[in-house]
Length: 429
Image 1 (cartoon, rainbow, N blue to C red):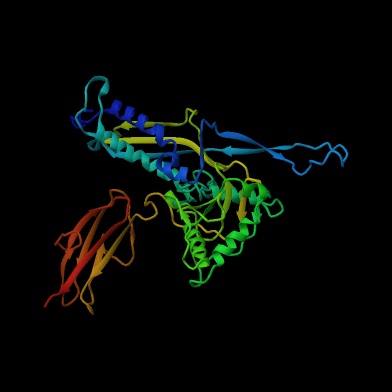
Image 2: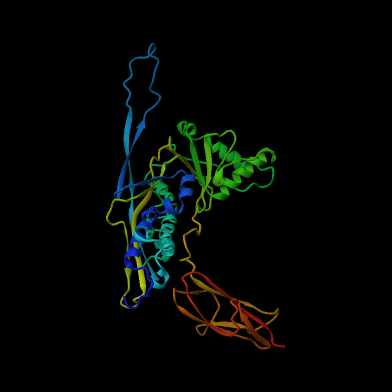
């Protein structure tokens, strides 16, 4: 410990702070996107121990008869259907430096606090919650085929099955189908062709009329992409030639006049296409296992190579699911849906990009990255030292880099996030 800074807060303080912060971090999108989860009316449940079985009673209707006309009817109430919410273990390992956690204790006695350190630890662990949130819709555990076969982006999106994956599996299992009335065709919802095109609105309204009667009577939310929501709103405005607009609420949810119980919920990262999910509130569920001893955060100071290294390991157990997939609680349209590049962080783009700013018609100016001519973005890693060298062509001269450096050769350090530099050249005359 002698090599640590004198004002380092210490392992005990870091562990205590990490445990305090992680209590909320473990909730994943329930912490990082709490307002969004509330806007979308997604139910957050805790205390799940790997699996939670949900029982749904499917009731039979239409059996009641007038007593003075018909004989006695022995009606079955219905039957119970089991649904299982399965949660999976995820983990992450972060390395920082002791210099990031140096400060004098704030307060005295039992009230001792380290506000800057608490802020730093929160920022580190919030990244974990963001990664969990990125799996909420498109997560698919089948993407992860092991370290050797799986790309970084696939591994990051394979923490648990997201809602789209849950719907796809129910369709594959025949639970969601046209025969069951919870997969209902809808005419394509695309951008209006002009200011008189009402098709997006008309097609949406026609689709709602095909829902099960019980779903239409319930307080219903409809998940869709932001573009699909915009097309429907534009189609509605075209219907009334701009004299009426949709009723926007907080967070860009909106209602259409005449559909008082239907709330349209545009979802960032929902995907590209016009598929939609109409469902009762709190039917989409995000569960967290807060009872398992495998849910924890640990802190370690010092490694064999670096006494100043501070390592955080955090792991938790979570999953997503649909509580009730039957037609009185859910209706899926048959539209298309493709994933978009909507993920947490920049792990898919840790590349170095270099541009050359030169007079029109100039030739021969180039940049070398570690003695290799730059031709396309270069993949980098955290703390990697990169040597950039600007080489002027004939009748040209190097002026400076975009970071202000005026020497032709500079060194930069990889950060794990995108890096961008511009080399400025001018005519030598």
